[in-house]
Length: 331
Image 1 (cartoon, rainbow, N blue to C red):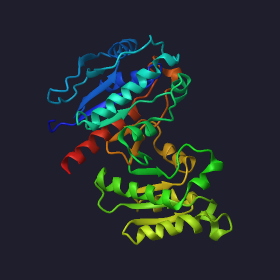
Image 2: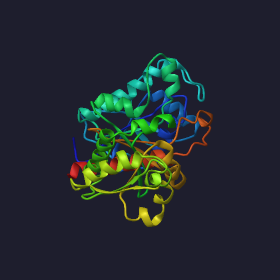
Image 3: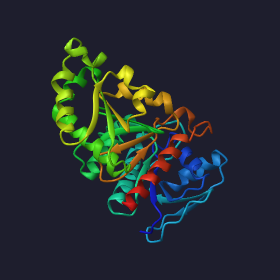
């Protein structure tokens, strides 16, 4: 593979805005070769519907990567199983969606791609097709044999990782154990160094309870789990601050001194990040042997094919994937 990065972009749920975003992505030049993994007729039809000028070329894995010019896009063909109507889900295409993910992820493992960027999928319709599916993160973790994937979202310099992800709130406390928290923090620390090139990352760690437990009066998770875990990892050289009350952690005075934040659960950290950066935030899966970034939004079925979908998050996810791929090549 040449020096230029080659990035796989999966088009996501075909009835959603993923194909629209891929057609919009192709309207910009990129300092990398982008290869959309999709049915080319789907991308061509959606581009025509949106009145985007688009020339599609078949992906050639044996050719040297070439920079994407505006209006041109390379496609790794995966055929649809059934015709697509924008906004209308069809379980018949669930296998197609998963095959695009498999081809992109396996291409990263085989060295054909330097990173994968994913447009949104619809978990419900995949499960309606009788295929158990909990999300991109778990799919790529299984494909790459990663023991524990960690979700992190970034908007500019604000990076927020999660100790737990899609759990009911009543189950969060039991899920935050010393072994899990230690593993998540090790992965976050490692990937900030390895993927982002930060030699000595400083991580702010949220408490679980209001006021970080207030000395045990509002819960003992900080005393019994979080503080001992942080103390043990600090002894190994990790720069960890906390546990801190989440209501005062997300302030400029605190964040200016940090490289990342670890929130204990999904809605503790992500509302703040999405308030700051919705529409240009990026989802990064840590703990994988490959680089994977994604958008910060869903399939937006009501916007598919209308021209009203914003491509900012996919553009940001692609730019970050290119940056991370270049950092990895240099290292």
